[in-house]
Length: 100
Image (cartoon, rainbow, N blue to C red; front, side, top):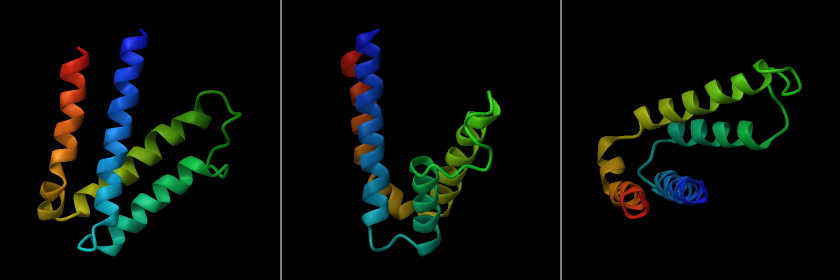
C-alpha cells in the first residue's frame, strides 16, 4: 500500500511539473493559461459551486470541473509546446515502471 502511495505521489509531482512547464512556456496562449489558473484556483480556494458539506455531490463537482478545465486547457495548447515538454511525461511513465 505504501509503495503504491509513493508511486502516485511521485506521478502527481511529475505531472504537476509538466503542467507548470507548459504554463511557464511563453509560447502557450493566454486562454489555456487562464483555464489552468481557474482549475488551480477552484481546487485551492474554498469557493465551490456545490458546497463540500453536501454528501457526495459536494466532492463530485470538484471531480468533474477541475479535470474538465485541465482537459480543455490541454486541448488548446499547441502540439509543438506539449511535445517540447513531453520528456517530463516520460519521467512519469518511468516512475511507474521503476516502482512496479
